[in-house]
Image 1 (cartoon, rainbow, N blue to C red):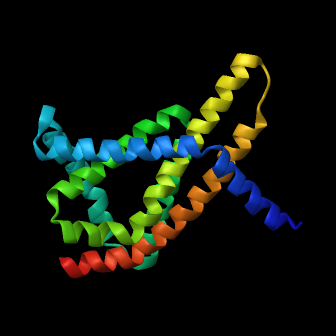
Image 2 (tube, one colour; image 1 turned 90 degrees about the horizontal axis):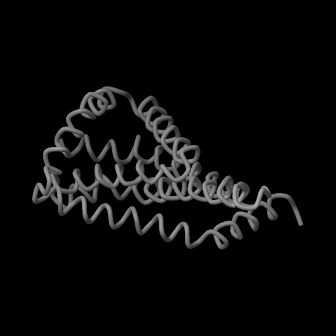
Length: 194
């Protein structure tokens, strides 16, 4: 068996072994999106106001992106998103905070957009980016579980680290694909809609 086939199979098995972590992380993202959307829409506990504040704080970065060419924009998006998913890996269980925050921002954008515009601006790259964020958060949680097992029985369970790294590599690939699409397709759609 070649090394490439072995690597692909081991990645498949890592996903299979850690599927419940991935399912749970996906559920957390989806539930936080739905709850955030409702809370923003009806300004429950000031969530709409908080969303406005967050969005306004991100506005200078969006403006900077708007003035970039396709290549520079794509590189900037990829670097920014790779930084976030790397944080997800090293923050372990605390990566859930980043995941919930990203779902909140997405819910805010959904709440201030009409549905067709939202879908046009999110779906092209979001079908890769959102799973990329979810998988990187899952990888962080898997590392956390490995650390807990190590503390519990003083034996290093390298399978957790290996699975986390394999899943993380897939998230990197998804984030790079998403960045290319966002910097070209999504940006073109956004410019056409303005």
